Length: 93
Image 1 (cartoon, rainbow, N blue to C red):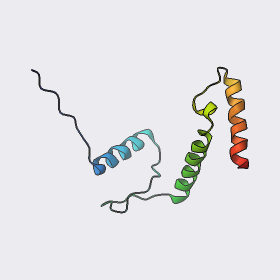
Image 2: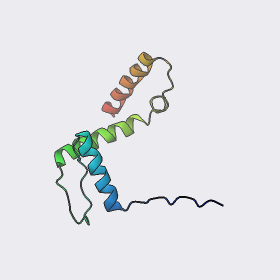
Image 3: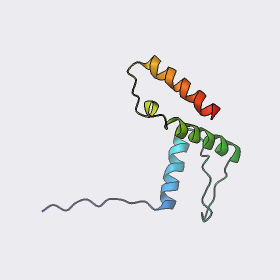
């Protein structure tokens, strides 16, 4: 019976370091604020974080339209037309 390999599980602090390294390698900015209990907090651009949060909320509202979330349309132009229509509905709501 062969021994199963041990799985490496990272702690929250190690996971944060891994994410920061990945974003640094990609040349991207990390705009997620640190937790309150973080030992070594990093600077956070709160304006950029607010904008990112607005975009995330918009996509969540857009996913409420089943046709957009499941990509029901076969043609790209019909899908894009419904995305535009759904954006108008979200904007007016």
